[in-house]
Length: 299
Image (tube, rainbow, N blue to C red):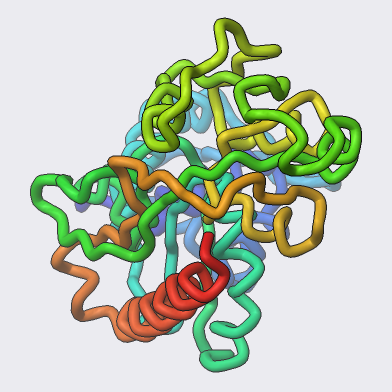
């Protein structure tokens, strides 16, 4: 007996799991008559019935149940193995970004990219975890924070990150104004990386003995500052919208550069992706505009 075609087995598994030939045919994008014909051919090749036709669908025979148990897991494994290798289209682009950078910087600008390239569908996935480009082949690029060293990948600098003390207008008023007291006497929001020590060394002052709270991520820092809990040593790039909207104000004209920056990272294979190349050009233009704005604003 010759081996049955793989699509016959796939049709059988889908029909068996759905219990309905019409829904299975719709899932496979074939007609019901074509799928029924395939099932009859499969049963003839094997020499026994697999599906019992009923008024409201189909049910498995004992032989059909046995075949489903044996074949189903293997087809699932094949589908899972091929999923990352789905056909890539130049009009579809998948990018990963850190959530805070995506929401605070990239998303507010995406409208301009869409207007320039309406034919490109961009899938933005926010995650704290690094993309494994060798395994996660659906990703074309990522925006990362670091020192630019990611072996095996192309890394292009976008934006430096700067730290500046920032607080809510309400806290500034409560403290009597920007220059009423030395910064060390304000309620400060600490961070586990010791960045305040670097800041006070920069301005030649002694850091405070204690902080009103210590938070371990920039989003929490900014949120606590907005709520008037204390002064955040904020990430200017990520806090730009908060500063422009007046929810936070800068307490100093000086700024402290962090040892890490924002980068565009991508594998060699993305250099042949027309959609990515358009995104790359646009992203660098946006980054250049941002740097110019930062220099003009003095922050």
